[in-house]
Image 1 (cartoon, one colour):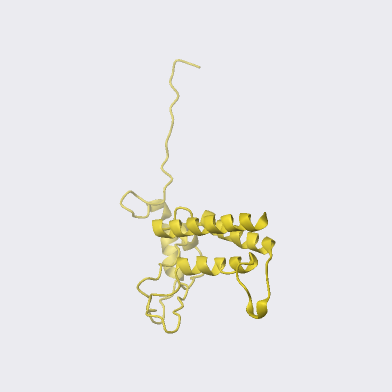
Image 2 (cartoon, one colour):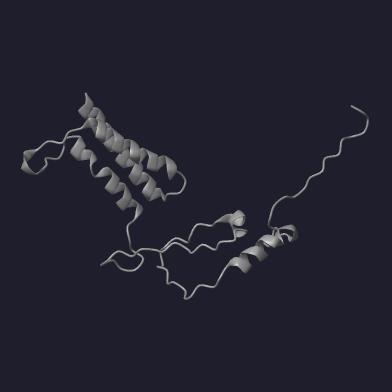
Length: 160
């Protein structure tokens, strides 16, 4: 190396300024998206607890096709905004496990014990746990962890 120090050039490639404004070199993206978008016929009322539609990010803004936001489904006989929860999803996925473990008698005295199917449903719940890691409330996370623990213990007891 020579006596001269090497100079390093740092270029800020972020699309937004610290204030949140679009940088000048990316203004064309904003112009394309506003020119292609048509105003909606009438605004849709959204439930109070409905999550906002997922952000499409800056790359989708340059898309010539304007997409409609997803429609939210309200279930009958349910107060607005109080549809199914994460707990309902987990309970629905866990519901067949006791049947497949042989802990529940079916009508007519039938037995539906199938340890392989029980294991598959337990593994599906573990996939939900892995994919939602960091996105759950403490209560939701504890509920899922406790349920998985109990189902796994019962599966091991039955498989011996």
